[in-house]
Structure formats: structure tokens, C-alpha cells
Amino acid sequence: MKVNIVSFSRRGAALGERLQAGLEEKGWQVYTFGKGRYMEGAHKIWARQIKEPIGQWTGEHFSRSDALIFVGACGIAVRSIAPFIGHKTTDPAVVVVDERGRFAISLLSGHIGGGNELAQTAAQIVGAQPVVTTATDLAQVFAVDIFAKKNGCHISDMKYAKEISARLLEGEKAGFFSDFPWEGTLPQGLVECRAGMELGIGLTVFTKEKCPFSHTLYLIPRVVTVGIGCRKGIAQGAIEAAVKNAAEQAGISLDAIGQAASIDLKKEEPGLIDYLREMDLPFKTFSAEELRAVEGAFTPSSFVSSVTGVDNVCERSAVLASGGRLILRKTAWDGVTVAFAMKGWTPVF
Image 1 (tube, helix red, strand yellow):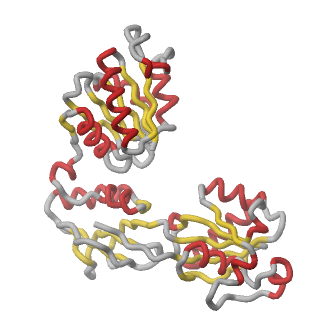
Image 2 (tube, rainbow, N blue to C red; image 1 turned 90 degrees about the vertical axis):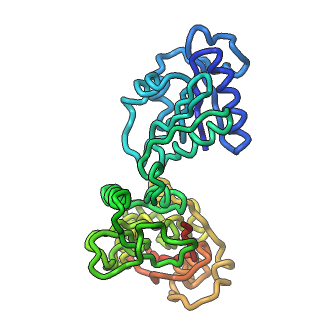
Image 3 (cartoon, one colour; image 1 turned 60 degrees about the vertical axis):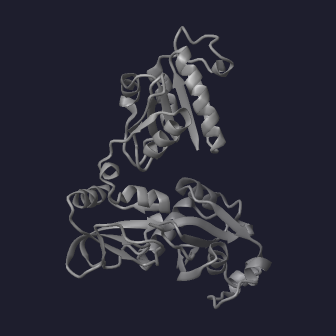
């Protein structure tokens, strides 16, 4: 996790140093900066002097940071980040700590970005009072986005997420459906699925399933591995179309795919590598010997065996990489074969 700390005075610089040391102890990657004519020579940590306007510096670091901490006034932080705020699902956490270390304020991206947690951590390091203003935290009710982040789930529709939070804040109920067994107790306000419920959460990778709610917020864990086989010189677009077609056929959300797998003969296949890079998917490859050793019943191909030394690439690689079970057998599309496997997974409340 990468955090950039910026201060504007000598007193702020000293506080920034304490924050840096405390966050690094917790495993954060921390960079410190100073802005202002009183900062020059303030301390050895201020090797990174900001010469450009603070707004320009913020723009350069906003999208490249997991978090920004401003040691100074809220007004400076607000004016600096305002032009770059996009959406709560993509913005970094922004925290403000006053230079005397009295308050640590979660200013932006409190839930998904981790701003609330960072404010509490910063407060603990410097002995400040954490300031958190999100309604679900104040009311101590279930927050969809915190649960999703904690469990590594994609949120299908932020509008429904907000509506569920609003209902819970008003003391109303929302439904809950899960394809996975969970640990812990359902939070107050969530009830297991009932026929006819208007709004609820569906925890599943199969978003084409009919959940028992009129309106469903899908929380989609990235627990699916896509196994891919392809002919040499395949185009990126063909692989993209094949994976999309297979996902539609199985009713699986593309957001459920967490990694890809294939035989090591394809580890440098240009079209495949370009597709995986665009989709930001980790890629595991295995030798023919490793794939042959995978136990199970797979769809054989004498042609694939003659070329690769193993009777099936996509199914075997998906199972081996995931450590789970097949949920879609081999499908062929324009020179590409695709299979899906899913590992065991347990969400935690």
C-alpha cells in the first residue's frame, strides 16, 4: 500500500515523520514531501521538496497513490484534490491531520479506499482524535462497501449499495442470498432470502441466476480461474470474444475472473499476453507433464495432444491453477478454447 504525506510547516514536518515511521511499521510504503519556504532544510526527510504548485503535485500523485495524507488545514486539502475527484470506487483515501496532531480526519474514500481505517491508524500513531463522518459508521450498521472490500468482492451497482445502506439506516430490512457458506452472523437488518423481497444482496459469481429479489445488488468475488488454449498467433480480440462468449454461456460475471491459466507453451503468446494485461489478470502456466497429472475427467482432443503433449489445456490448467472444480467445461470459439474453474471460498462478516 502506497501513501504520500505532504506537510507545509516545520511542525507539520515533524508530525509527518512520526506518521511515516508508524505507517512503515505496519507495512505501508510511505513517501514524504514538503511544500513552503519555511520547509527548506527543516529535516533530512524533506529531500523531496515540492517546487511546483500543490495542486499540480496532487494531480500527479492522486491516481498513483493508495492514500494521501495532508498535514495541515482541511481547506488546503479540499482545494488541492477537488479537480481530481472521480468516483468513490476509484479515488484514493485522503486523510487530513492538523499540524498539532489533535485530529485525524477521513476526508475522501472512507470505505472502499480505506480512508476511515487510515484516519484511525494515523490517530493512533500520533495520539489524535479520529474524525469519521460516514453515516453507517456513526450508526454502526452494516456497510456494503466495507464488506465488499474486506472480502474482495466487486460491487455490481453502487446505486443499489447506497439504497441498501439507506434502508438499514432507517431500521428497515434488506435481503441476503449467497452461493457460499459464510462465517459469522448476518448483521442486523440483513435477512436470508425470502420470496417477494424487493431489494437484497446476491453473493455469487452467477449473475444471470434469478435471485429472489426484484432488485439485486450482486457482490461478486474474484474466485474464478479462466483456463485458455489457443492457436499460435491468435489475435487479442479473438481471445476477448471467446472469454466473453463463455462467460455469457455459463451466466458467470466477467468480474468474477481473478486469474488466467494455460500451458507454458503459451506464456509468451502476444495476443494472449495483451489481453491479460488489458484485463489486469495474473497468469499461471504449467508444463504438459504437470497438466497430465491433474486428476479428473476432462474433454480430450487428439489434435491438442499431438501439438502440446496433453489432451486438454483449458480445463486442466483452470483446475490446477484454481485448486477448485470445473464450473464450465471446454468451449471453443474462433481458434480459442475456454474453461472456468472455481476455488472454495468463504466470506466473513
